[in-house]
Length: 212
Image 1: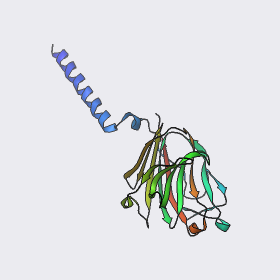
Image 2: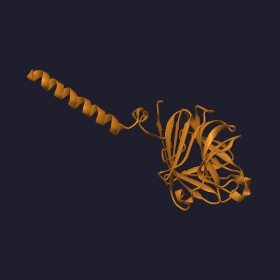
Image 3: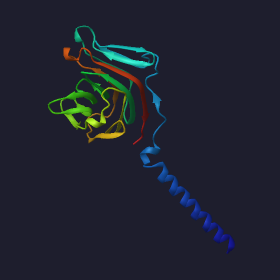
Image 4: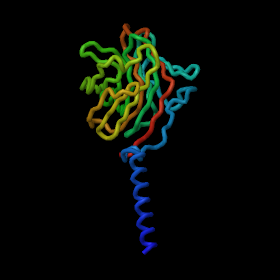
């Protein structure tokens, strides 16, 4: 009888420990996250490919993008494609600017972009979610989320059809849209002489793949 009681007590303790562990670990999707990998090594453009006429360079650990001659636009993409992930980017912008973080990029008409801009009609700020052909899937209109003159941290979480964008630890977009399942990560430099002074400075890019 004594052994039976001890066994029951031990079983109850083990069940409690397991329950607590699940709570601490969070939702099941969190348990399926791999370790984060640095997509930008802080030294050069290893793992990246430039397309278009924009200029990209790395100096003192900072990746800088700007228009090319005659206000030429362009993009910088990862060589690899990614499907479900959490992407973290630390960046600074020299305004006026129209830039953004591409993800699940397959072609100029098949992609998503977390915008970095100040759009007037409709009013939209950085953290707005853009899709070619569909314009804005979600708009960020909260100016308090944007550090206009300093460093910003944008986190993009794409899992299945669910897209969530955080800007400086505040959720600014949450959308369900399933047109594109996988593609490259990238940065955009938009065309236009009004953006001739634009610079995007990037000091950290990391990605954690997620299993559905």
